[in-house]
Length: 527
View 1 (spheres, rainbow, N blue to C red):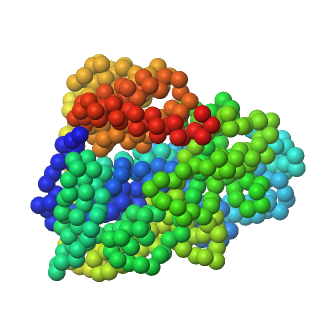
View 2 (cartoon, rainbow, N blue to C red):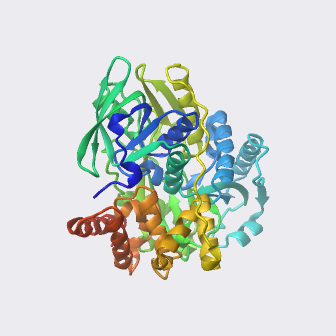
View 3 (tube, rainbow, N blue to C red):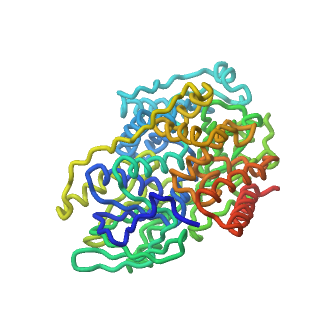
């Protein structure tokens, strides 16, 4: 297996201004903001980009309505601002979504009304629609299967839905393409040494199976739930600052759970937890999340049957007529939220605010926060680095991408529209692949609007080395493949392209398919 051409630079011979450890959404935000001001920046990630929490979220870009009850007005205001930025900057990945909040007590009606008033005031300039009240009759018309017993009506308001892992990957590759920064996945930090004027870090490259020594002026630890582990192991810092919580989601078919809005509903488990349904890709609905204290290994977070059952019980209280059971679950996934330690508060009530602090004079920790606020976290972290006045800011202009003159009239209209909608400014790379290889315009499978050119694009331009990198975190098919009858065909076609692009040998070609099949089999506990 070999690295992609843009990841084959000799990084050992370069002194970087900044190394960012962690290829989730927080690290991606730091990388992009540092790149914008001309810092020579390298991001490293021991797995695939977004393979941790940043691909296992509720798929929402939202302000956080429920955080108002804890007085986190600053967090909510910032998140609403960042949500609107994402809607404008990444319209192909972040889209408006209506939320239906059913009301079963008059007290709750008053509380939610006041909360939504504050929510709207905190971002009164937003282009999204405001909120409105629906009486019981209108609520049942909008969502007929909802539990009507004691229903007082509902509020409808607007936030946004996103593809979390694709968003993270796009931000990282924006920094690479627009500012010539570097980002390496499957490169793990294994040791750290502080020199007189620089830092020297030793890493292990899992793609080319070798150690690499890299020099940098500063390092930012943006490793999320791995923060304490990295601080203890690499930086000899013994104090534990985090207390992660586990969030589990289940994936259902929209045929079984026909909803076009995000539905908020109580878990009815005497823990005051509210769940979301999120209409998502491939006609699926994601439902979650649980929120439980988590102290096991961060690298392998398993879904337990009890997690699924918790969600199923809540679903069957809010929509009893649908009779959703374990047989309807397509897959489940669990992630770990990076929360700051506070022994006096349960995980569901713990702050989602972030914290940035110096571990020593050259290592900065960035931790916590919400997916929506990654850009703000990145800006503030880079500002703290700049205040040291060791690195000179440079006027950095975006690199103009060389667009090849492509005769689009030679491609089908449906294909052109679909690719532009899905890939925005990167579309021309996919069109070019089609002209280089006319067979790339064929569908991966007749049931999905996914073309072979997309597989080649991700393998060639977005750092994919394993099947789950591509089918899981670039195309999101891993969520539905556990129950898909023709999955072997999709896996084989993907493996064939990766074997060419990544120079797999025959043994790797067979092993990668075997590993991926084992992985998706574990995504459904009932097969």
